[in-house]
Length: 102
Image 1 (cartoon, helix red, strand yellow):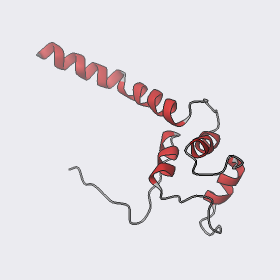
Image 2 (image 1 turned 120 degrees about the vertical axis):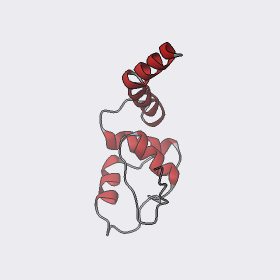
Image 3 (image 1 turned 45 degrees about the vertical axis):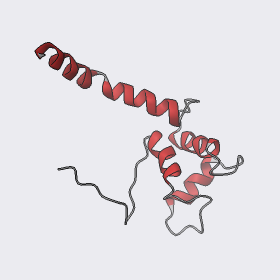
């Protein structure tokens, strides 16, 4: 049991972050775009959350200014947020549910 515990701890400490990164990339940026924004936009297009003509520049314009007129997508939609998180862009909103684990 001690050996199992040591091996499990070693695996979690040395490999789980890499596995998480690979999985997230595989889901959120399968074309391996170097640009985080392009990865997000590609995911939004694949998920049919924006039109195929939607661009990374348009995404930057719409998300960088909170006073921008209505966006092409609902930023609070969990599918949109999934595309962002899968490309290492994480943000929260007022009113998001909060889970206190400790």
